[in-house]
Length: 138
Image 1 (cartoon, one colour):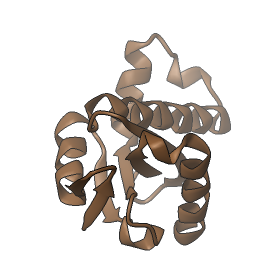
Image 2 (tube, rainbow, N blue to C red):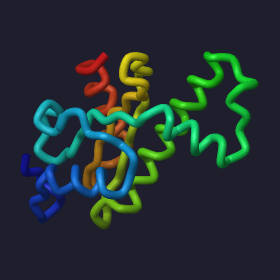
Image 3 (tube, rainbow, N blue to C red):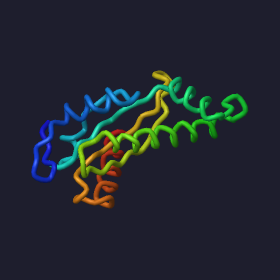
């Protein structure tokens, strides 16, 4: 889908490739059209728990000592952080919002809604869009 990015047109498939090449996220759905806006790139993505475990272990986090609920919170926080870090590889003057919303036991992944827009749209508006997108996937 083509999206208006200030004075440019951006293809959401190009953003998808950037995410897949620069992160461990897998895009499960392009939600840009479902955002009902012409200036938003949005994806439903997931990241494997094994990848998150490796990152936590590298950071010195002892996974074996945590109860399942605390560990799930760590997974969600880490997935959010990794999604926010994608702002570094997004087009110049873009802003990013992401929210981890589900642990998929069957796929062993954390599900994340991700949205990107030009910074002129504003953080509050992008946050509202993330909330709306979450109602579509929950």
